[in-house]
Image (cartoon, rainbow, N blue to C red; front, side):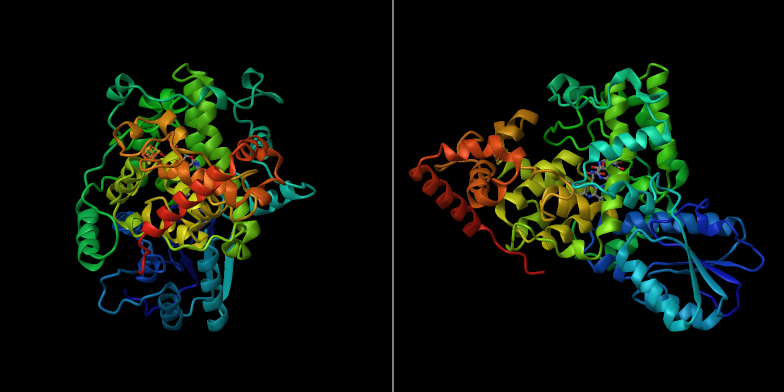
Length: 519
Ligand code: FAD
Ligand code: SF4
């Protein structure tokens, strides 16, 4: 890293801001300005990041840096393995500012509250102006999201999503949604069959090039004790590769995305999902080009409206919605714990070693690939932590560690709000809870499991089912205020006193058997 010269503006680019068209570059003058990027230890250790997540960020950053250098722009880049490398963004930026005293730091708004505060602190301490440009990557600005919130007693994705469809003219026929419907959820809940699974096209896989191979070697030596594996690393790490993955998804999988988006199948990692979340979150892809390509596929008859709407809802709806929640609720959001859950995360979340087939499959695949699809995250791994009563901050730290797409603005509301109900219903109108019977409907996992999803007591009672009933019993009084819980609570009222005692005892025995993580 050579930074002994003086610059006019220093353009700070973070690991999840790899877009040359970002607002921070609008006024870039190659004669007087420089780009600053840094790989720092802290970003891999503030949560115990998996090897695949670390490799994803480092490789994509190094490829982006290469494209900056190819334009002959000045670049100050700290590599993690530089001899003089500093451990945190704040320390590294301070050193550069002291060496080259730019008039101004310019950056696109960071995605993370923690990083924003760190960079503001450095600029203040060094008395250098910090200009934060809006992040144009997103459809909805934080200000627009605040306007959407104004005057509403409660937030609901559906209303936000409709507003976004109207405002951006997506799947619309003037003021009306195409085919007169906003929502095709009821058509998008099919389970898979063996013959459908056999026909799933192979996903895009990108052979690591020399830059990625160097990163993989670095991660293997420096982060050897971190969770997960990089053996299967084949993620897109450049814009060109991400565009390639998008094209292949639209051509080969989108038509079946909707119907099978909730389904699961043992040892099948990719199914009909897009696997584009990391490319989007690192800003290798613009959400408008992803949504536009999906809408175009419908308009030219490649995919049904139901499937395309199901996909677009995830990006134009959920992705924008969780970002709005994050930036309007932080920093207090991190401490929300509505259900007062306080148990430590079970050790097997870092190894996948459990006899529960559904959890083992979702955890092993997470650790081996840095990926699990939404329902595996929501209705298996985080369902179990919710039902057990694990401290939401420990659950949050795990989700932020293990996935290649993990960035706090996307991860935290999904984990704390949607999956753990720790925000008391801000994000989701009721807790996402289900017994093993739901997993049995959506997958064949239970067929090879030692437990029986129908049983809530007894030796082979399914832990998901036991804990589902125990959850309803433990939170009966709090949840009874929630209209949407009436049906589930009605079933609890039918339980005899003996059944209640047996369920509670079975749940306690599951909790006693867990080994806490002491990392
Ligand atoms: P697809 O199923 O193909 O969906 C298409 C795209 O829609 C995704 O690429 C993603 O960009 C977007 N999307 C879908 N659902 C959501 C959602 N609920 N919130 C935000 N965007 C969504 N997503 C992240 O990008 N980063 C995270 O750190 C993250 N953590 C999560 C933690 C939990 C507990 C849960 C329940 C969900 C989390 N998600 C996160 C949302 C979702 O699970 C992933 O975006 C999705 O599984 C990524 O796989 P995919 O690209 O194949 O998505
Ligand atoms: Fe999971 Fe229960 Fe089915 Fe086993 S029986 S796979 S634990 S839901």
